[in-house]
Image 1 (tube, rainbow, N blue to C red):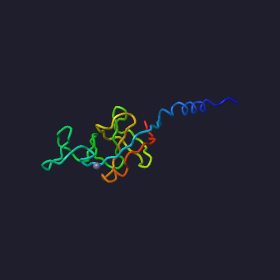
Image 2 (spheres, rainbow, N blue to C red):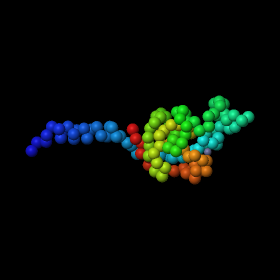
Image 3 (cartoon, rainbow, N blue to C red):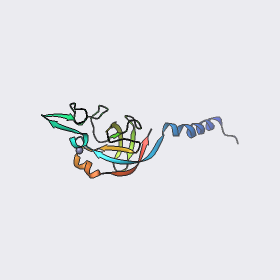
Image 4 (cartoon, helix red, strand yellow):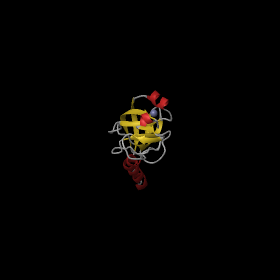
Length: 135
Ligand SMILES: [Zn+2]
C-alpha cells in the first residue's frame, strides 16, 4: 500500500528539518572555572576604585562582557566560535549560556564557567568534558 502524501511530508520534515532545528554538537572541552574576583577577572582595587588590568578602565565587578551580571549558568567562551547566548550543557554543572569572554579563553575547545565564590571555582579546577553545544 502506498504511503499517504501527509505521511511522506511528515517523514521528510522529520528527517531533514529536525537536525537543522534542534542541532546540537558534542565537543570535548577544557572546562575551567572563575568567579567575579580580581584574581579571576584581572582587576584590582586601587584607591577604592576597581580597575581592569588590561584596559586601565574602571571595572564593574561581576558584569560580563555582554553587559549582564554574572551568575549561576554564566560562561565565557571564544566569541568567534560561540556567540552570546549560545547554550551548552556541562556535565556536573548544568546548562550555561555564553555571556562572557576572557583573554585566555580562546579556541573551540575552551570554556570557563562561573561560580559565586573563588573557593568554589578552585574546587572545580580543570576538567576535560564532553560538552553539548546547542545551536
Ligand atoms: Zn576568583
